[in-house]
Image (cartoon, rainbow, N blue to C red; front, side, top):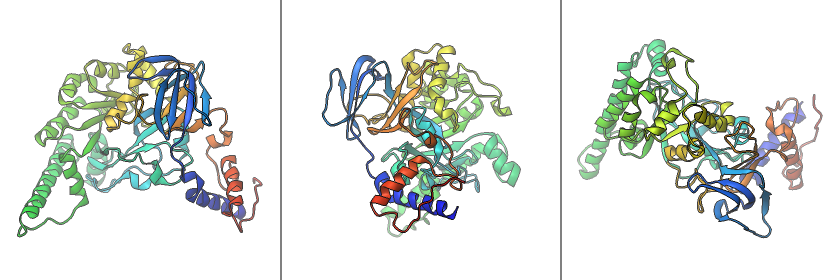
Length: 450
């Protein structure tokens, strides 16, 4: 048993510092597929060439020597799916010690070993928005991550230069965590509003004091506060708010608060009663990331409808469908398909809900979300049309590198592994590779399962 533990530790250490953390981008040619571009229609019998992680060409009869090639004849090629609300890759999501914790960042604690990340790839998901939880009125900053499974350096999971985002929350969760459990504000929905106003007012004064001290050497500079620095960046439009929300009245309330402080970058998450205030959301410029048909799991979300996404879309609100679930993240293409049963969205409208629209909400639509020359090579390849109940993800490609291959991936990559009883083939293979490089000198090999 001790030998097995030593081997696992040694393998992870070696992988973290050598091959697996190296090449993040790749070259690949996908041929003869039905290419769903999202922005430029559906292209039959079309090839996609990715070079150094970027889409280089889209057309017919493309060829390139000495390059990995996938023959996608009879298959459907679409942009990688993007989940605008996820918690995969995180061990803990709530810094619930204060109603306002804008100073923390989930990106400081990414976990590349989370098997949920691989399972997300198995559902065609290439990017997720790893979010702080909803225990706080103003929670921590979130992280947009690329699903580079096999890369063990957490820094390499961050989507470099993606806009900053932060988690807000309305309603029951922060009221219960702080008011009911700890007898501190907010205990009520009206207390929630004052928590936002108090925080923004403090940030506005902090920012003004910094400006005064910068212009006048005699003016006193305020004591540095990472919390207030972050809130000031929200006021300056440098951070996109993603707000946990259910009830229409609270959604209107927060838009009123944001208007008073000149903040207009917000995507409401869940937003189950968004259909009640869809015109108001559209007028404000707010966006909505919703469940397809998930509600009534607690009292404040008792009332919703499976037509929510369609109603929001028809009212001009940029809408996405998210998972907020380690399981549902594998089925977002099914969730998007439900909008055709409820709301009669077109194929392209439905697929935008899990590709381009979440990219817009995360501020990364110039880079991903559709298949265009110059965009990043994030692609999902399906056996059937992705909105078909028969669709099966066959390949998932991130930055031109195959990160999921249904046929070639070892079966034991797909399960949770108990390091006390077994070594998965994925790591055992890596063990032998690294031994040849001298990385495993002095480690005795004992691969017997107990």
